[in-house]
Length: 406
Image 1 (cartoon, rainbow, N blue to C red):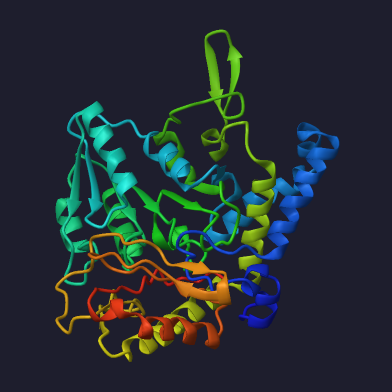
Image 2 (cartoon, one colour):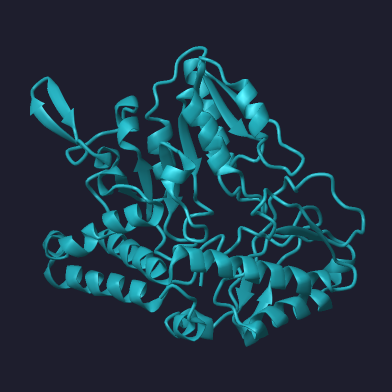
């Protein structure tokens, strides 16, 4: 397409007739072509058996590899299709041979699951994990990162869009630091792939992980891992089977020559097919067009919410091109830093297709504005906020992942 044909996309998304969905940061409403492709394969499995169905649908399942590669500007042999983003990230991270004295540099807004993995590895190996300070905008301070580099740095690991707020970290600037130092760079793109126009060459990461269920609008239980060709010799997959390696002699094995060395033989073929269809769907629209619409929706909804009495919109300019996210709260005093506590996500109510949510007594509200939402839907959301008494006494945050998913 190259442009957002809103009516067509909404017609192809059955959930749009049921709910006002503002939770794509959790999981998106899939388009009908994704659902149809998956159901068709499941029916085929029921008719002729799982192995036989996988053989017959091989070309459809294989489409996920070139589609994922095109999405992020990679090569097909640098893509591994995974069960989820956590497994993708973990297979990369745990494949690095850390030792005593090795340093892992990360951000202060790192995803909690990733940080738990850092702590586990440091306890096992004697490596250390060091969060780099934030700059004045709450992003990782690239200057401080550069100053922290020495010969003991084994990995720079960064969450592109942290899950607990609207921050977008400067992935490309971090990539330049990593390239200059010759340090391996792992980017968690779970909340950015599918809504931001990503290019691994431009970013400069050696490793990237993401999910299918969020902004790509694919099925749950899917994701993929990117491993740059030059980075593969530096990693050893933490687990192997007869798919990821070949048993060549009683005392020898050989790794699969490409990124599939990080996969397992058993997989959900219907999910793999659905992931490929979902990525192709996004590619037909075009990631630049998606990103533009996301910015427009963010600006519009922020303006609507900011016009509600008792709600103050405080915006941080996250880099030259990153000014479309803000924090909303009831107080007029501007916070000194982005929120650090994750609130519950925004769910939807079937009754009258009215958006609803639970506001915690402490913390910030995460919200997402799908790119297919209509003006009426966004008005209903702001009207619900206006009516809600919680705005007068509790802090509220609009969750700008630059949510792009239909």
